[in-house]
Image: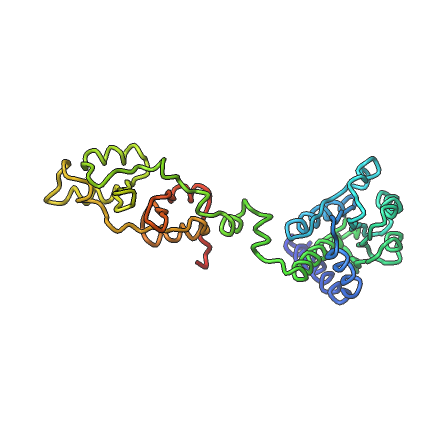
Length: 326
């Protein structure tokens, strides 16, 4: 008896061979399917039952996330009212390996009544499903990886791969970019890097701890503590003139001329780093904060008047992170 990993290797070999054999059959019918989908003004509705239904659901999800509005519709639900989800601007991708699944084939004439194009995925264009199709994608395999030749294995792997091939081809045809991908994945790291702006994390001026340059150090420390940002902004005649941080306080304590009753102007950093454009990407704001080794990125207008500030903790809490290539 073989070791389990030997059966695994055989399975992978059989399924790999099915994929490579299919590569040679991809041609005009595949091009026609891509053309139909790329010209849609509506949605692509994917239908299938059993294992084909599970694969179809995944194909619909992949297409939807890569720029093709798409959803999965179960044939049984469609026959009981959900056909109302289909409009004349849509198209249907019907999946059935045999091309004779009763639930799917019974549905096809009703779909035709909507006068929408049908793309089929089955083992033969001459199948019952194939005869209803405006484009057909061949998902035939020489053998299933299942030792009994019964359980859909190679065929479902191939169907899934060809669904991915459809999505990739459509991305290329449409010039789909990573910025487009991020629109559909705002919660992902790519979405956060490409779409979150610094202004989304802007703490407005009225919520910032700000004192005048003649404020005594002991009073300034109280304001900074209440502000809970680890920083204090110093303003003079309506303009930013300095910043004082927790680190500055520690360094001040080591000075020989340290005195709580001296003005904050004597201890502040007189040339704080600022930006004037809060519409920059949040990830770029984080890079500035990290490269400058500061906690608070101050935003001012062209006249050096304080607009607000962005704190590193807010960016990190939102999951903003630089990519590995940055």
